[in-house]
Length: 196
Image (tube, rainbow, N blue to C red; front, side, top):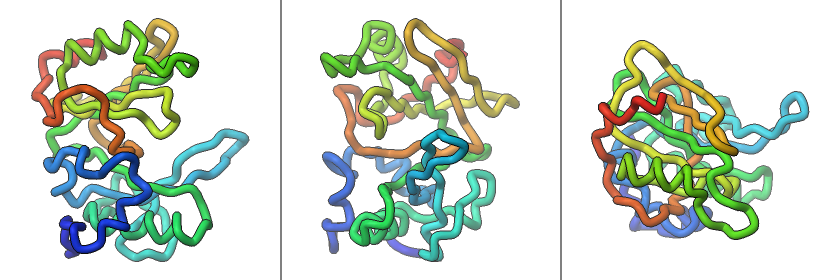
């Protein structure tokens, strides 16, 4: 298995802005990573997970751990993709049913004109007090915390002028490392998941 220590070749992290070190080590230490590429399907742009262990462009499955990689493998593969100019690429973290993590996606949480986090999203950030980063679009936020959704795999609902999605399995989050002013650790927010 590849190491998660990329200090020997920091150029592999150059596509992450500003730094992969902002991504909590709790996540980096897990072999639940994929690369991704942007693709248009049925007229909609989506981010397709790629199996970084083989490096051959095969798809990763968010429900098949055999297609998941270490953080280092995902970074290396995404770096090669970006360097080749084949496709916009990066790394993603895969949520598994047997891990302790929940991802919350706050769509349209950042005003595209002012680049400020909207009040409704600030309220959620303050309430949960966990690691958060800007999404790849620059207008959303990804929060990752410790907790569980029980038997429900995910929830998606409108909120204010945005949308909230919660997932704890069968999904991947594109990770940017572009953390905002929130704690760097993953907080246990099991009781706070009532927003679902």
